[in-house]
Image 1 (tube, rainbow, N blue to C red):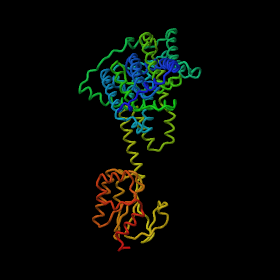
Image 2 (cartoon, rainbow, N blue to C red; image 1 turned 90 degrees about the horizontal axis):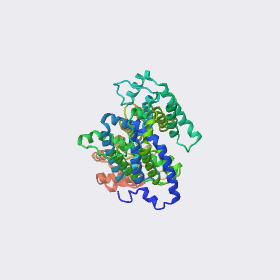
Image 3 (cartoon, rainbow, N blue to C red; image 1 turned 180 degrees about the vertical axis):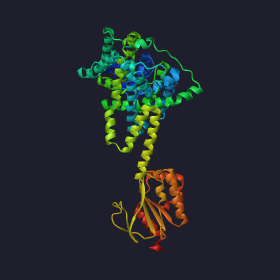
Length: 558
């Protein structure tokens, strides 16, 4: 990647920066920081780490990604998509394992950016992204039932997987705390009603303050963050995890999951931001920035980060138009960490659960999910539902792997159904016509009976290569014309079948002529040697030329 390919938007924006934009970025940065504060804490707790790790992530990754990013307005930090993944890694491998996986994910993202793989994200089907996003939303919701209802899981029960959490919740339902449920319900009501009253005041902040007031002023027995976690307001310290071949091997699958999810979510956020601002992001620069941000986050005690669509949208709506707003957001959170973090101990756990309920609802895209179920082809619905179920029952890695495999297989099946080779219909021994006649072949053509014409349509690949094997000859056939105007592409398997057809023709002393071969198939044929084996004189530009070529070879049979 040269310097033009890696071009952080910060430096481009500063060329025309002015005082007026600084004021707008300052206001937007402060507002986004206020929104990010309770979300960062809530998402950290949902990820199985302490509240300060969420703030560390928003500060370090938020700063680095804004500084180096390929979008002018992207706001990065911990997001809901990572919550269940991170919780599983921490439960299995601890914070050291998470740090290793996050750093490796950062390296993978940087490599993806330098090899210009940003555009490849579009090859992940919409049904898969919708399926696993909705699945993650449901896992977050199910994981927060415990704190929302004040339930205590029975001792000794595993609660790593979503199914385990649901079992443990119902096993401990006897410990249901009505006080916790009341606080959670009130906070959830605030989150729903507040945006209708005022969009300028962050609803999550109001919900947190209401929750704190209820626990402090009313005789309610509800767990707070301070009851369950030790609050640390110290600055993040540089810590390098111990790398070994075994730790890297163990962390690599999780690293790929984090990297792919970070790439998908950050670039989707950039696309949404482009639509809101009329700008265009640099996807490869953004991937490099996401990689650097995740490496820095892990080195300073944070968790995986990516572009956050909700916070990015809030930044844009409040006037943020340059990466300076994202940098200000990170600096404001740094001040909050140093001076206000101890007060986070007062936040009730049901309030955190209520915030995560709303996050889960917003990311569920349930209307899109239902619309796809109603309108999409059956194969797409199958991929959607399977990805969703596997995300909830197993994990994101299994869901994406199986979903992509199914999508590819179903796509190939669909393409193979659109690829076919058909013989021209014979009217009598001397006349035939094409069912797909065009301006060139607009009338019945008088063709000698020793000439046989087949027309290929659709991409010729391994899924459709067997069509070539179905070409048959008659006893009088002396020349076989294969019309390929409808073949946009061909692969090695289909080429191998074509060569087998050529050899069959040679054995029966039949001349093979190809008509209207398109650019990609022609390149493949020349590279494989098929072009030379058939002979350049037997490649014709159109069907008329091919028929004339055949007639000239066998005039004695005319």
